Image 1 (cartoon, rainbow, N blue to C red):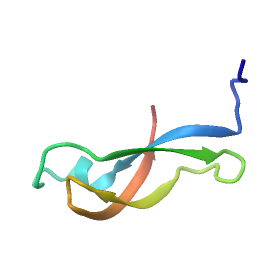
Image 2: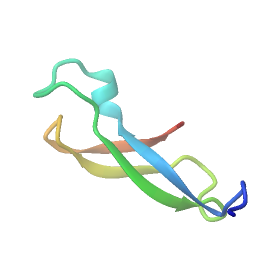
Image 3: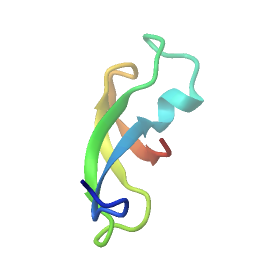
Image 4: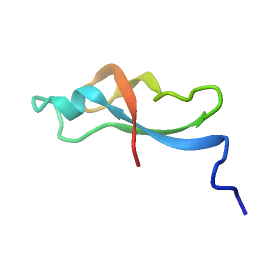
Amino acid sequence: MAKSKDIRVTINLECINCAQNDEKRKKGISRYTTQKNRRNTPIRLELKKFCCYCNKHTIHKEIKK
């Protein structure tokens, strides 16, 4: 049985351009699932990933589940 305060947690990353912009090629919001270490990165994670809805590399921020 896992502890409730695991060091490595699963997080969701969401495209910030899709959430704000209505003029896109396709409808939808790009989301990625990844893991992070709470000790090394206590703040919210931001990564530059490819968004298939915007059709370019954009910043994806960590969202609350």
